[in-house]
Image (cartoon, rainbow, N blue to C red):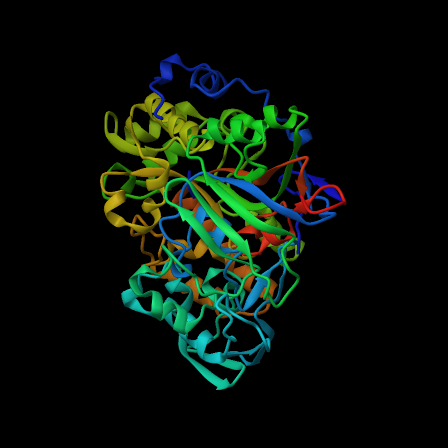
Length: 558
């Protein structure tokens, strides 16, 4: 069953050169796309974008398949798995206590059961007989150690904030771990299905030492184990035949690092790679019409935004942020930057993220948000009122894909039309991830394009980013009332009660324009005719999706 991508669409259960074009030269972003370099592409229309629940199941095993990724992970250490390339690969090697399904629901993972005897206690009963890739059996000690690495302040874990309410993690049986919380936390059990809940072998991680995640065994339990890593070129995964679950249909999965979007597309069209996620938007039409495979769309829980990283300059004035939002041509960006596969939005959160809310709560969440329609004259007036005319801002851009480069250029065009000077700073695809993890990489940058995907099906996943001290609160925003509402929402386990509080958070974040929302964006995946089975949804970030990929036709192993 498929559903059109609309603002009220299906409700189941960042990342990525420089285009020297001034605003005066633009008639629309579509025209900009035509002159920016990528091959001319017909794109897709909203009517063509149907969200598929999955691709057809594999009909047989296969020797190997090759997958395109836009950047090489700096590490595959699960504590630092905070971007697309790392998680796309790691999800097939390392597993978590709970599992996010292709339908974006929660189910048991390495824990056969999770129980909540009181609001501040979570008990995880582990599966018996699960083996790590070195053959050793998983125990409660490994779980305590693995989750402890996320909490270690010396480890710089990307997921540390998800453990801020954890008081203790203890072994309470050979195959049982009990987590005691400082206070009730509705988010913690959900994050145990992400990289935050990964379990690795204590002995294996300690043996690898400082090299863990960059070479050798990852000491995990997944359907694949890390094979050859050819730096700058490819990462190979080999099937783990001692896997506790259903074994992978492919003996090997090869991830090729192709930083140039045209090279990724050409590799798919030539058959050098069999498929990929994060399809370059400028290639939607070419791949759709190639006759060589199928382009699918699925629920992405993703919004495209402009991340405000510096409020010490002109962007510290709310009027300047409002002006930029009003000057953005969102419709033009969706057509050109997202290849027509997207929906203009004035919301930081996707509608699908509110699946657990009542209809009344959902309506309240999206009522009275700031306008998404372009209004240049009002934007000019705000810039003048703020005394910001002629002020300079710097926006990071990258050649990862047209969605990033054209959004950066759209911001530049918008600023130019209302009296701001906006410079673009080009960052290599492999270095773009550093914007999320390294404050030094963000020095001198005021904004950058950010495609944010929810890691759980809860709007708080995004909205908590504006709490004081949050990992992705790059601009250092702080508001005691907002912090209090985050704490209130976190403490409520009943979904609709929690989501009612989150409507207030949504309204506050939208009014303050802490990030500037641009569009909702579905997940795209291309599979050639040789393979099938990959999920279409954003679940591939934490679900061992590569194990489902196999031969599209029944028959002998190929």
